[in-house]
Image (cartoon, rainbow, N blue to C red):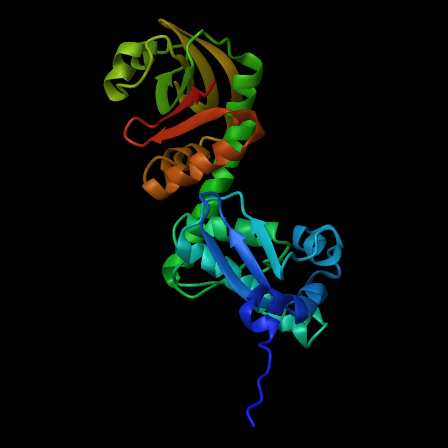
Length: 315
């Protein structure tokens, strides 16, 4: 005699299957809407974040209000990540949680590894995403599968440190405290090296609107102009003076906003000029500027050939 059995509700409803098991579906999405997902043990996530109650994933995993809906936990990364980088971030979360599943000691947790598919500026987006998700990269930094990725990361770190100092010590103070803005929605920041005899006058015609507009056709003739100069003043029969200065250029004159005297051999200016030398460097510079609170609400474009940054008001 034939026996008939009712189908399991889990078979027709995968989400219910997640709810009835220890497995949840972890979904990561990035700024443009792309997603990566994978299955993970809820218990493993609990172990992973038990010491990080303030972490966003911990809030989702532990709080009743944030418990997985239909067996799914979703987190939005407010960064633009390509598909390879997003998948790599997801894999790290799953790997870290899996390591905690049968172990409670932190020393058994594997170091973060940057896989082959993550390269260029994506390396920093990868690390920022890992940090947002509350996963420590560790004091020794990440490991790398390729020499190229390690090379780009270390160069990028140098570029970021240079740009952070440039913004903190020169650009932000000049624009916030000393700059007088015209009605134009553009600010052009030029970067240059200048050598002169002590007491000589600056040639501000190099930063006039006519000359700059030839290099940047989109430049408004009324644009505000800020110049960062590395100035070497030569002196007869004695050691010269080197300093970094910012000026607001107005017509044929310049008004000094910031000044910092440095040793003649100081190389910070060379590092600043390197920010414009390659597309990867310019991308790092743009990211540092866009992420700084003083530059919120401004469009940022970095121009290599003219060694300039164009800020545009978005209002």
